[in-house]
Amino acid sequence: MDMKNLFPELEEIKNIDLQSKVAKSLEKAIDLGGWKEEEIRTIPFTLLIPELIGEGKAPKINIVDHIKAVTQMCIATYERYEMLGLGDMLNRDELIAAALLHDVGKFVEYEKDANGRIRQTIAGKRIRHPAQGLELVYEFDLPLIVRQAIVFHSKEGDKIDRLPEVEIVSRCDFLCFAPIKKLFENK
Ligand SMILES: [Fe+2]
Image 1 (cartoon, rainbow, N blue to C red):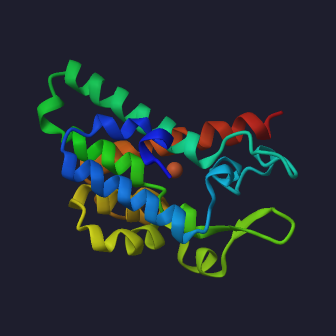
Image 2: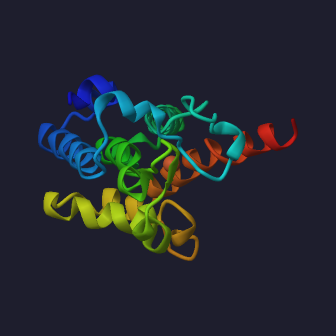
C-alpha cells in the first residue's frame, strides 16, 4: 500500500529518515490490523459518535480523513505560531509526524466483526490505541515528541505535562472530535 498516496501530508516532513519511519509505522499498523486497501475508508475515526457510523455503509468521517484533518490543522497552527514569531520554538517535522501517528494504534484497536461492523478488539478495549500505538512503533525509535503524542494525546495524557507540539496535536485532535459530537447530538 502506498502510504504517500493515502497520506500526502507525509511529504511535509522534510527529514527523509523521519518521513520514512512515519510511513513504515502507518504501514505496519495497517498490516497488523489486517486491513486491505479498500477497507481503510470503512473504519470510522471514533466509535463514540454512533450517528457517524452508517449501518453497512462507509462512515461519515473515516480514520484516514480524521488523521489528515488533524495533521492539516497542526500545520495551520504552526503557520499561525510562525506569524507570532514562535515558529523557531517548535519542531515542525516532529509536529507533523506526531499528528500523522497520533491515532496509529486505532488500526489495531479496531476490527471488523462477522457482520462487517467495526468494533474494538479485546486488547483494544483494555489497552486502547494510545498504548497500542506506542507498542507498535517501538522498533522505529521515533523522537520523544512523536512517542509522547501517540501515548498521551488522548485522555490518558490529561494529567501529563504534554510537550508544546503534543499539546497542539492533542487540541487539534479534540477539535476534530468534541464539536463534531455536539453537531450530531444536537440534531
Ligand atoms: Fe485522533
